[in-house]
Length: 289
Image 1 (cartoon, helix red, strand yellow):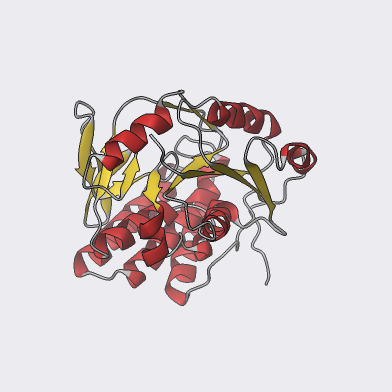
Image 2 (cartoon, rainbow, N blue to C red):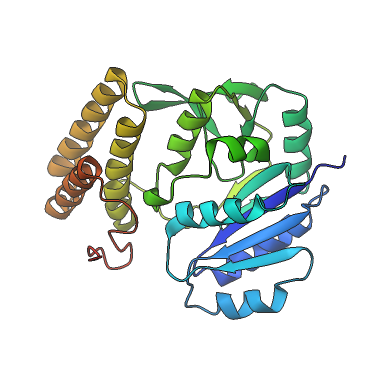
């Protein structure tokens, strides 16, 4: 197998897990031809560490001048990787997910033997903008959406449809990318092979601090998707989902006022087109540009 794969690893202030994630990439049975590590202006010693590995083991580092989120970092790496005309695939990774040694090999084998142009490890079907998970008992199947973390994407497709949208910063960038790829005539697949171990360091739970800023960016970016790829069904689905989330927050959340305010601001910024890094996930304060 002679596939030319450019692995993209995005990181921000997770030095310990970054080292582990990078070790898993280097241990793949099918070695990436290039590993582009994008740092989003870390402050925990990550930059200093990356400077020691930059140029070794086919690792090339990009140091962003500001925190552009996962969307901005992936876009920067894709634009850089496309300069290599021999690049056939992009393998998009996060710094809190570890991959089994066979992960990349199986992704390449299955994408080359199928009709898919983007092949992820997790995905869903979309109906009125809502995600319905794919079946767990089918190893290779078609889907409407694939999570970009761990996904393999044909470079020729990226050349034609462009990289992910930088304006999303965080959340929903893979949703928009899936819609854009499909509307360009390409198919999306999901490979259920259990090759990844996600640590979920970005936070989870229903009413946690992480879901405050995630709720804002999700509401805003989902509106971006409705506007970019408009359909009545998507608009109805968006209105239903946001109403449901707002009512749930107002009734159940201990921080209901802040949670409702941030989601409403996300909806407004989505309508008015205010993109990029507008809410600081650390301080939960809006950034003036």
